[in-house]
Length: 116
Image (cartoon, rainbow, N blue to C red):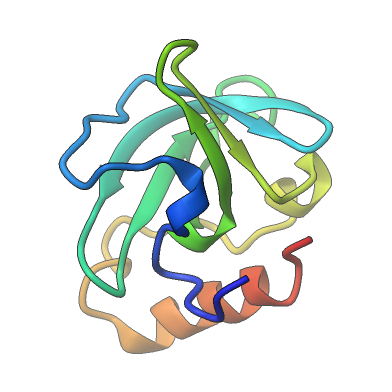
């Protein structure tokens, strides 16, 4: 697996420019929510997932490198994380996630150390 936590792996089946909003996100142990926003920016690709009532409406930012596969027919994205790892992730900060290198590195470090 590539060391680039902020890029989609070729095996995911992701095609840049594909709209992923509304896709269900599946952790290794169950559903975690739906994609609310995403980016295909080179070296900064991510999903923002609305977890709904599962963790009280929390939004989480998942770097593209955590994506294992994308099933376009089923509109599901499978990630290499457990529900607990996602629940314990750093809080998504909509004001910091673009342009704040420290926040970007904090998230990257968290997920890089938890990938399967």
